[in-house]
Length: 572
Image (cartoon, rainbow, N blue to C red):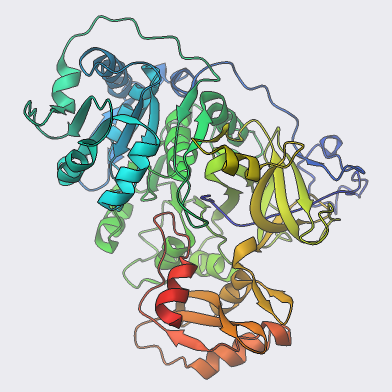
């Protein structure tokens, strides 16, 4: 299950707030909507919102008519862009071409094997408008991984670029009922059953598009597979629209529709739900001109900062670390930046302060928490986040309920007690594709979705991540959080990245071992790190498995640490 951030919480008996308003940490929240009772249910601090009865395409584009001449989506490398007017025209032509020329039927699955390019938005919304179902795959996948996913989701067509065309043709050859391959920037090839996207949308069509209902399946992204083989997550139009509405709550959304002259910069992949719905779709809906990079290189990213002068940055902690510590990134590069949204993992307070020191201003840095299975956002930090709430991943978004279930005894916990986060809300998936057993395991008997993440919540309803259940290190029966140790290590000025895993030990069961990336020419030693960390943690949390210096920390495309890879490759 892919997650966009890292924090959790549980509340059975939080009090209705009667604090003095001058000292309350949630003065921006209508406290009458926070309810904690004997059932252990924590409800969102925000009033419920009405979810409109419209599909994703209707929802995103309904207020964009005044923006037809404004750039909607731009390639940060080539400068190629589409205005709102051209994008909407392209979506309609794409939808008609898929049904007419490509002979697809509503309900068929179309996969995208694409990097971040401006056409991603147009093609994906064309798929929705045609009543088709979207799935996407990582360009980093091997042939076997693509074949497994495309067979599981019964893909009928694939949209790709010339670079990946050969592997798509190999994989699609064995797919039952496969219709065609569409190439962005390529040419028609009748022999190979390849169609040029540009040629398709140049044709004139006159067909009526189907009515796409709110509860129709919209997309099947695949979870990260860090807890097993990837599983297809069935998300409806209702799920995606609900999450966009939840993020637009006045206390959560920093930009309102109509303020369309702001630019955002992202390199986070659109083929992950965070990049797709929380960044690409939300920016399109709000009139934010989104500049994207197809892949990260320091040169391209730094160049995009200067050329496009983004108001918004969408990052993961490793990218925030690059911006904070790389000598080629100067204060001038970041002069336009006012709001940073970080996801995939929790950015430490030390890291955020390093970035603010580089910028020279108290820029807003916001974090949240979510999963592929929840479209993806569950928790998000409010605009007026109290400074006392360091390390929080925020409050429950509107229309969302949570429980924190004890790891021992299956009881709901009290405030400030860790447990597994369980949630309910309109953004929760319909289930896993072709996998009723996994779907059943994901939900409790009374309908709560298990997140597999350990969190706690405070008396004001703010959630904090403790760790992933299966990532916890057990030292003589005590639970040790890798995230806690990593955040401490990253507070050292000579360290640029770190990951902690448990290694087997005869006496203790497991011991924490840290893998550390230090700055070039840094003099920091293993003893320096051990002395620094051990002074800040209980004896059983000390890094008794040792320190290993490495060139880079392995991560998946969404920025999550590949701990199993470290255990296998580095601990053998």
